[in-house]
Image 1: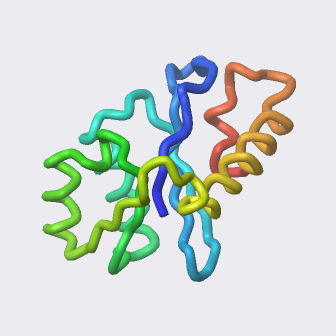
Image 2: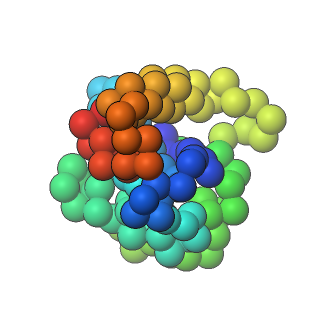
Image 3: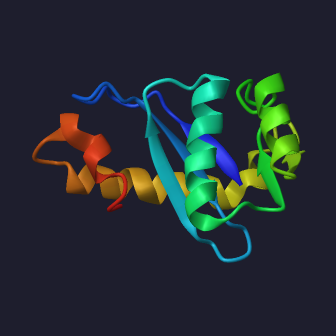
Length: 126
């Protein structure tokens, strides 16, 4: 499951979004800081995750415009990934990733409490 978080408070490095990914079967979670959430940025971030962890057979997202874009459709097709979309107005469908958002944001807040503008540096540690 993939999703976006933000806008968050602008970091000193000008990041204000997170792309999150949670493997539904293993519950392994990843998050990447993003400055923008254009389809190109999302596709590049997904590629960087998939290169490290392996390409999934399928992904699920909400109906955000970045995920419904032609670029992401081409990306998933080229990578032989089936893209499933959650039902509109039914956030429980993405419950696993939404729970991760809550936990991850809390951890980032705690880790960056002395320097909140540096929150993006703590994303990998959280």
